[in-house]
Image (cartoon, rainbow over all chains, first blue to last red; front, side):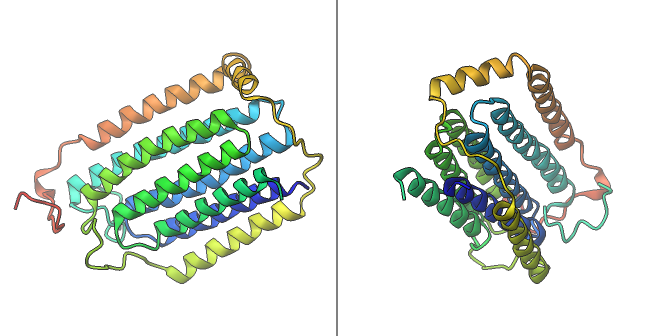
Length: 103
Length: 182
């Protein structure tokens, strides 16, 4: 296996692990979203590496990266929508206080 | 070690380093900036891997996205500057364990799977962009259009959730230090 591919995959794995830690450990909604961003970034590195080193002639690999970027943008938009609604209703985006879904 | 390999490893390490820094600082603005640097390092890593279009797109998109995130951080956090060093972490050991296990599992897959023959020569940037453009407006057009519509729908949904009138009996009890009305 190419060392370059291995470096990229290990980087993706590390970002995934850090993101999992952040998404599970943080109490603030915006910080949880940052963890999810890192998880998606890990997936994105893997996709770019697979496209670049395994199938560089197939542009569909880059298409998957664009899909991940779309998911990141949607996650931000919906997450901040929920954060604003929560802040207006309760004055805080601390998830420790969110014991029920009722607004 | 080639120069290309060095830069891929360097920017990969920087991305992970700044990713860890996101959760190690008490200042939420620093967290947002660390995430910005992490994503930018990833963009630079893509450029080092000769994925020029994706690298530039990553840097442009994430710079904007993380700047917006930093603004929201200042708006919503009780202590955006991190002056009180308040601990905002729960289930730390479980989270750490889950993070380490998922890292090791992903590394195991990366190392032990036979990925097949590796292509070291990438198409030149112009060819990459042309091929991606033809892919987006050809075979993958339905996916591309669906992604666009999904973003539009989620934007409308997010705005409609955010502007809902607050009920009178659930008036917020704001304790945050960044609320200046009281």
